[in-house]
Length: 323
Ligand SMILES: O=C(O)CCC(=O)C(=O)O
Image (cartoon, rainbow, N blue to C red; front, side, top):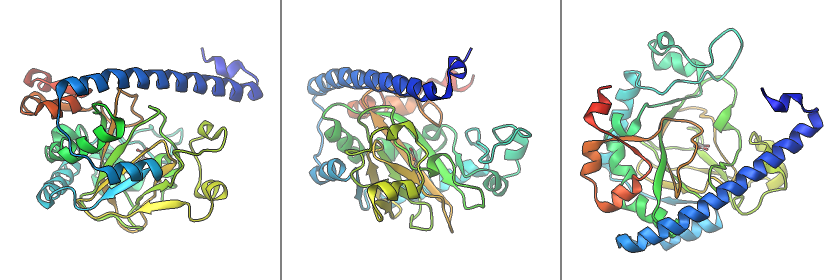
């Protein structure tokens, strides 16, 4: 039974506020406990890290940072080719139909997916590659690179870990803005960062990641209650020009604090491909994407530093893979 349906409308928003406040308190306690434990492990494991003080400073002040050319070009070329091959062979996570109506299922059917990317792009704003850390092995070189782990370690002051990994393509189409195209904040943890790497350059016309500078520090009361803010809402509150659209070259590393207001702008002229790495100190409930998984052979060849970063990733044995 859905109790909320039995509440008068004006009590429903109060119930939602109480529920959200309770969950936020729970997540703060979860983060604090995880921080104690993972800071302790960090001291014990004596893992060496390079410091990136400018990145940390920019993350704290603005909520984002861009590190130009952080990922080698050959890795980016491999990522680009593997991602295109995965999409061409329909290795995609169930694709959510952008315009929902009662006459069609919420997700595209296997027969629809088999019609290929042009068809998918007419019905969905975005498609995700299935199990990216397995399907596209070049993702491992990026996700477990020193620069990603070092920036995350310095940000948390404790051993970080991957909490989710998405490889996605956002399409140019006539469908309305939906989901991540609206301004929102991620609430799965009170403190976390995500990384983006693009297989090709991203500019204003190819659906850049947008973030409201400093909004991780300052939000109007009650704004967490609605994660569907329009550009107009944001500009009315934070001012014209408050939205920063992050253009980046293929191989740049973009880091962002998603507790700031952000969105994926809908691409106007060119589709956008992106690798997105979520990090944190405790496992989170993912809004989208598979549970992150890697092959046992890949896990076994990792350093201690990389294995710690894989703490929340499911390691698949050959027997698991054949199931
Ligand atoms: O794809 C993007 O640029 C943003 C995705 C996003 O909004 C999110 O992960 O919360």
